[in-house]
Length: 100
Image 1 (cartoon, one colour):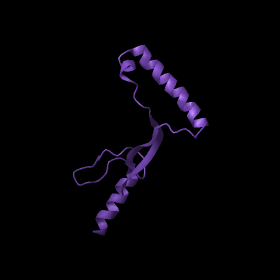
Image 2 (cartoon, rainbow, N blue to C red):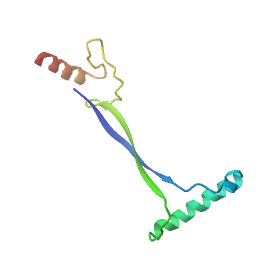
Image 3 (cartoon, rainbow, N blue to C red):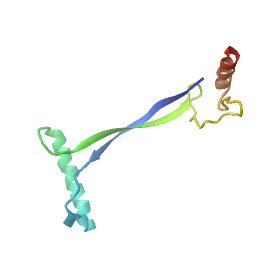
């Protein structure tokens, strides 16, 4: 019986260069800056020869879960260390106890 780490989703995070200070202090210019940068990034992706310094990070959303019932693992154990999430986990836990 064991808990397993599974990837539940993946998203990309893009880091766009910070706007100049004069744009940062004015909210409407700030929004326009990021809209313009997003449009330029879209064009950049189509024409990959650009030298702009955008960074893309892959972020994995993971969850630790029971390998049998796939419910989220909360360290939900009784006083003896037996898992409480499903019958199969209890059965496997009991097998490990009898082997010792």
